[in-house]
Length: 395
Image (tube, rainbow, N blue to C red; front, side, top):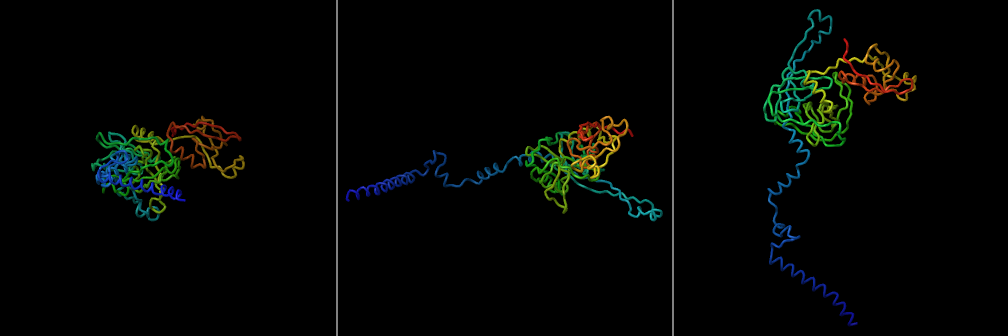
């Protein structure tokens, strides 16, 4: 019995003795040397007990806050400009539409100066500026405001109502400018940045306003508005408000992938539906505007078409009521040279499904002389692929 008690005592007493001695030794060493290094000398006790300086903490936080978005903004902001315009608009006296009153008062037309504003961005060091046609296309006087607070009178080099693009020029050199990117490799869900002059705030702060979002969709086609056709647009939830029109939509590298143009405002405010014109589409337009000041769109196809309805769809055995049917082909026309015949049903053009005659009219209106429409046609229950080259109208 006494032997068992002795063994139990050893088991209990020895660990207590070792623990006491170890604790005493460590406490003794720390009390003797308060600057003893811990964790292989990476930190000292003194450093651990004393807080870091505010400068050190702020420096680390600033480094962490800088990211691809802030770098893109810093890179591109100096090239974003505010645009103030003065237009002369004509207003007709409402009484003039009535023949009775017109015989007494005549056809009375009033002209009034209207001021507007928008955004733009410099695309070359010699002062070429890109913006929307609906911002500057009808302007008589255009003033451009840089982030340096400098103001320039701008010249309208060329404008195109259909694509909603205008090219301006200011005199000078070595201007900051933004690199044009590649809108064909845009990724749905990637971060994008809208920069511009919403509500004229640029004049107050002399700096553009920045909003951030993602690419929500690509290839969006919008209904024609005022003779414009917005096709293949980039949709974003980055807030685009009144005055942002003509400003750049940037990727996280600070490259322009689109020109902000349209917002969906059912309640007269941004609801996260903004649209930008893809920059790859704009590049060809810029070249032609710089050379000719306009886009040649006096096109001729020689086609007469009508929308496929339910009766036509049943007759031709179509599964869906869509497409257009060719009702006439003019002699010696581009359509005849392409091999199109009366009764052909055009299902697609340039890979886009033709829903009705508005779709193909928009495609032709947006095209330029020399462009080719690659058509998918149904003829006698066979599918054909034909190329329709658009030519200048003979009239």
